[in-house]
Image 1 (cartoon, one colour):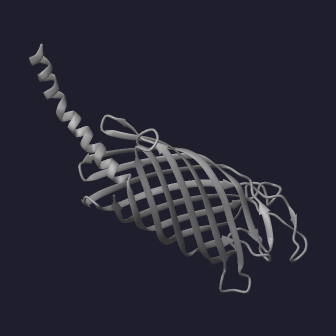
Image 2 (tube, one colour; image 1 turned 60 degrees about the horizontal axis):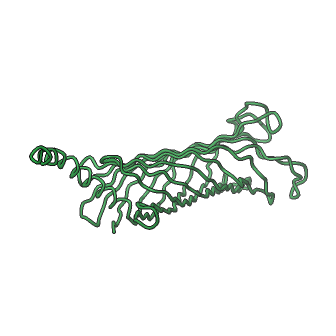
Image 3 (cartoon, helix red, strand yellow; image 1 turned 60 degrees about the vertical axis):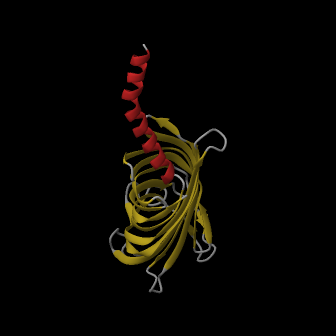
Length: 277
């Protein structure tokens, strides 16, 4: 019996060692401070709903790539429950994209094509807990965040228009991580949430926008060239909508103004370096 137990222990030990090595590598990735260069493809479109613009008609859109940077820090330690996870991040992109809309003289989509000067800021805070499943680490988490987008349509012309969009959001996400080899960690992350306190400012007016579902998904790779120095790359996708605002009095030019329904789709690729502690 003793010999049999020893044999079982020997047979099981490689698998246990592999799981421990994978979890150690993942743990190093979850205790990092990093800086990434990022490029975001933005696809934004406004459509009429019958009250604001003709129902189903595309009113204006923006499409293009903007570049910037991202800062993040994460911590996974045995603080309260074991493998407690906290992460925060900030990113900013800025650049010029193509605006397609209509003019007052020709209110047909596509009659006006201009450049739009865009700046987007994103903040997020995550809290969760990791669970080991053999050599995988699964981490459910809660997330709070804020999105702010400023656009200046036709910035070099007298008709230039500045609009500022913001919303906060909350969501529930899951992070799945594995180390296929000791120095490489792959992370798949997804989140489902909802926006709140969405609004837009333009022409001196503050317009309240409708809230909506928000979705994120991302895939990232982290490679340790040294125990404390890691190279990283990844891709993320986020989508959300804004509901049409109520009609309000235009106190600047007279009449009435409103913001139509809209959808935003953001795809971001990143590459950078991190310090693991």
